[in-house]
Image 1: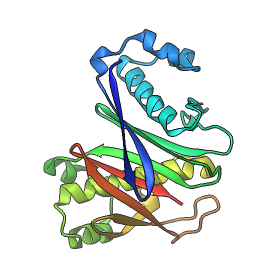
Image 2 (image 1 turned 90 degrees about the horizontal axis):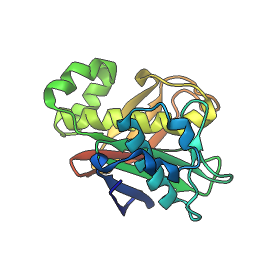
Image 3 (image 1 turned 90 degrees about the vertical axis):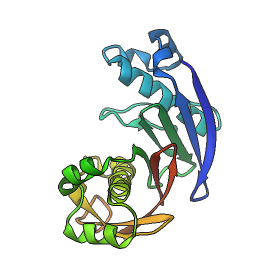
Image 4 (image 1 turned 120 degrees about the horizontal axis):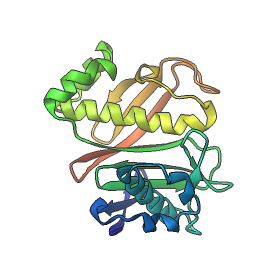
Amino acid sequence: MKSTHTTFLLASHTVHHVTFDPTTFTDADLLWLPHHTQLTDAGRKRKAEHLAGRIAAAHALPDHAVPGIGPSGEPLWPEGVSGSITHSGTQAMAVATRNQHALIGIDCEAILAESEAHEIKDGVIDTEEEAVLSRSGYPFALALTLAFSAKESLFKALFPQVQEYMEFDCARVTQLDNKTLVLALAKDAGPFSKGKPLTLAWTMINAHICTLLVE
């Protein structure tokens, strides 16, 4: 599969960015993955996205190890490392840190169309969060994409310690500016107490929003 690897900095962390062409993917490409047999029944799109994400992850690791697949589909990082992977369209990104207990989550989302943003907003934010997004001065579709992506990054970061999937009402947007977005937990989550604030960095790249939590 044809792919291009670049990097960019977000909140002082190196994000490994892979742009790929899914039309060039073949099943033989998966043989590069130690866990390729686990993807036998996956669809072509899923296989290409998974491969691109693992390529990005391998670049993020000093020894170019390839994270396996956990029982809930989560990446299995090497001992002593925490990391996160995301993919959207023809892009995949990964970030890793040498801290096994770090909270780390990355997400990439195409910016929502205005009509779609209004259709899904009630499933993503409440009225107080909508007011926060409105005060930011950003177009609503962009701001909602940011909220959606930030919550996805948070869920990825929490999952290794919480071991359960979280809904969008489990955290609320309390602040949004031109570099960061702050989420507060709306309920206890594993070792983390209700109200705990978590600051995520964000950037725009290739008409997509990328959010990153590292704590």
